[in-house]
Amino acid sequence: GAVVSQHPSWVICKSGTSVKIECRSLDFQATTMFWYRQFPKQSLMLMATSNEGSKATYEQGVEKDKFLINHASLTLSTLTVTSAHPEDSSFYICSSLRTEAFFGQGTRLTVV
Amino acid sequence: DAKTTQPTSMDCAEGRAANLPCNHSTISGNEYVYWYRQIHSQGPQYIIHGLKNNETNEMASLIITEDRKSSTLILPHATLRDTAVYYCIVRRKGEYGNKLVFGAGTILRVKS
Image (cartoon, rainbow over all chains, first blue to last red; front, side, top):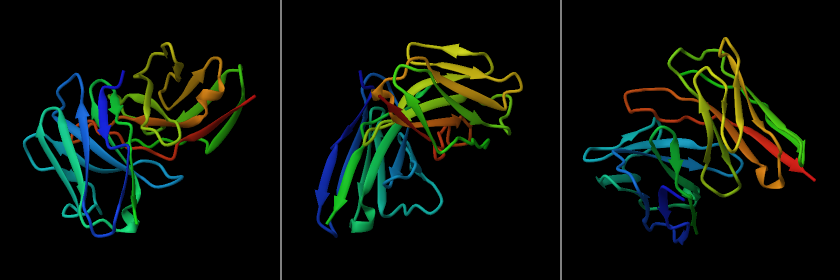
């Protein structure tokens, strides 16, 4: 069964609004989670590393004020896309590592 | 980080073995080779990983050359459900801890 659960699986929002995506580790404690973004017909691009109890670490070129990450507990990390615009429409995926990486089901965000 | 090179796409007949190659000529001694696949609009799925010995599990076999500069993922009896993008990743260990960086992957099309 799934060990990383992501919610929602899809969301449509209006331009200018914020959207929160949740990522939960179901049967293990995850001190670190990873957030990826994937545009159509492209590979996964790592956005940031979410660290429990501390600030997230963002990859170069990713706006930390736009993509807010909170990792308040060992089982939950959230990604909030603030003031979303159509160009933020993408497939967002979270992941956590044990001996191998487990991925959430992904969230399809469409900003209209 | 060691980079990987994979063919852009491959076709395979249903029921036949699918052999997916990966070059990782700059891999270092403590880096593992991981394989994941992503079926359309889903999160990636772990397949198998190895360090230097060949590995086999219920999904696939992983053959790593003696010099570790390349590997091959083998799906022994491909089915239509194996159609996906397959990613070969060399796992790096950085200050952020074991994050996975995805390349372009190989699109495997299994045809009846």
